[in-house]
Image (cartoon, rainbow, N blue to C red; front, side, top):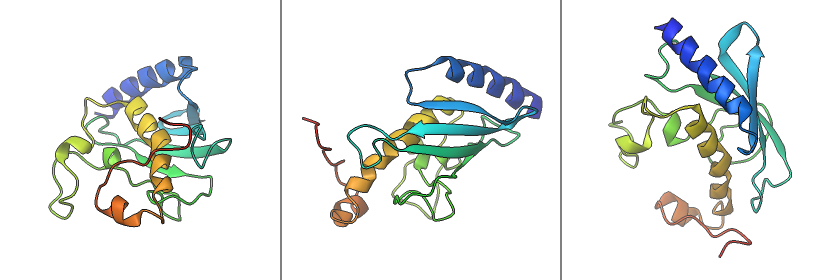
Length: 154
């Protein structure tokens, strides 16, 4: 299975490296290891992170795409979906299926093998929108309320 994962990751890496419009750049952490990627994000415009440069590591399991990678930011930041050690907690990085301990997240929000690395990175880039709700709109965030309107959006 690791051979299949490696070939798929090679293909995804090449495609992502060609895409200059995505707001992030990707590369291998070690040229001999296709299972560990370094990602550099630009902070999204009209967000609290605008103008920032953020580095993260993606570690893919040997059975990718059946299971999602782990993602950890190396750049220190405050965000409700990023633990102090940099681990990222967003639905798309949770294993497929349902979680009996988390009834607020549907199976459709979790990882599915049909999704690719691009989907993960786009989710991570736009996750900073949540920080606008924290702490002023904590009740809305906990209740799964609507995303806030950022400055400049209409």
